[in-house]
Image 1 (cartoon, rainbow, N blue to C red):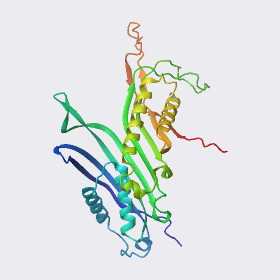
Image 2 (image 1 turned 90 degrees about the vertical axis):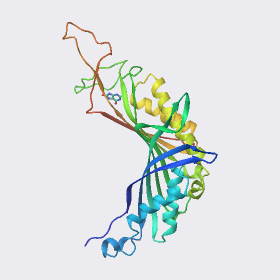
Image 3 (image 1 turned 60 degrees about the vertical axis):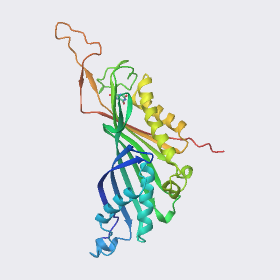
Length: 305
Ligand SMILES: O=c1[nH]c(=O)c2[nH]c(=O)[nH]c2[nH]1
């Protein structure tokens, strides 16, 4: 005998470009290019086990709803838009018990024209994305949800001020210690919001935390880039931990900060075979694989009084 152990369904890769016009100057605009995934949970078992389609809200309807809500509502910041979507799907359909939402936002940045930021022209910043993820089950009420925001694929490199030495050495070790190396990674930083500090999803959907979401995003991005540049890094591990600590210190609404960083190795060419030519950290081979992969999650110590 078999049974349905778990299920979820919905629409993925729903894409839109939203243009926001300044009411006092319609040519002064902002753009948001987003890719949305909405998956539904709930009383859908018979659609799998009895071939009964009656409870299925078609994935096409899910797609239509995402686009209509994007047209009717302010989609900035994406955390608020995710909350609106979650409350809509769980409110509209009594048999939808929960949703998983993921929104990717492209990074379009205005550029300067004649020394001033253009009103409506943007440069795409490459693969870097802002990602928002929301898990909500309505049985627990709008004060219980899991919301996280991330920066993904922000590629950085420093050509000095990075070291790696005093590591464990055994018969398998060939790596040479260094006090000066190239360090490069694709930053993936995630911050998990504290639901108790932010308040209910209904307040988020109404815009109560808009400024917090934008400020923490900018702070987390700045802190990550700042520490990457300024620290004489002892290791990826120590540097990423310092980034997490700094973000937690600046953002009381955040409960955890996680990083996942590939160590994208650049290996110094040995050119001594050519007339004893030296290579003082000037010519490297970008070695795409294998790469190191280092992850950590930084939380707050709670004092047990
Ligand atoms: O910062 C680093 N952490 C490591 O764990 C590691 N391992 C390695 O070979 N190089 C590095 N660099």
